[in-house]
Length: 253
Image 1 (cartoon, one colour):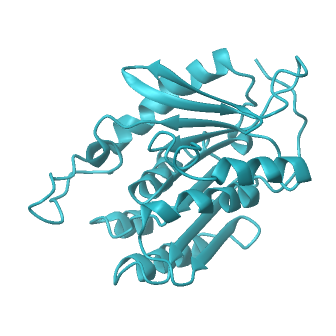
Image 2 (cartoon, rainbow, N blue to C red; image 1 turned 180 degrees about the vertical axis):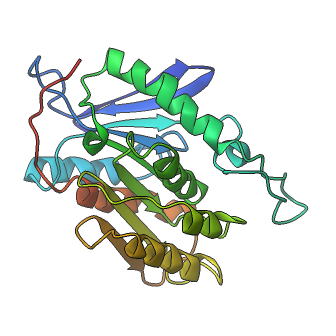
């Protein structure tokens, strides 16, 4: 790893923050930022080689350098769900449905905190949210709640089986914007609900006007719903989300 990875304590939770290799080399250079759920699970070298792949993309010019902010949840089943729902089985707690509070916390407190301390570009076209499973669900929900904040959404094996979420999407349009890009993927053998509901969500977004330039849906053939597989899909998601090179890397205060 050529960039820098460090942990910070913020609002009683752990942040895992990655800054790319050229960070700090030019005082006026700033970078897009990706807010990633589940802490560093999708990019920390302790869990996978995804950062190695990302840095290879940086070096080759396939991807602009990015800052990653991994947010460790306090209560995952509460913070990553949009409204309360019963547990899938007696082995688990019920879902708390505090997703709107969690998204508001990121917008009101975390984004200003990161902007004060790191050279990040402002604006939805430079601000992404990404996650896997329930992290993919809350990323999509945040796009609806704060469409002018998160212009790039990465949903890896999003949990669109969550009760009422597809109906919510039907009732609340996510208007297409020039800056918006949404990446979705799902494994072909993830289960009876995961695969068809991800396809259904993709179809709904297409109906709302999101075309192939701003919406991508990949199927990972032979992939089950396995958290160990999610990190290596993050580089592909980010490469597509930030494929364009518009705008100047100048910090805006």
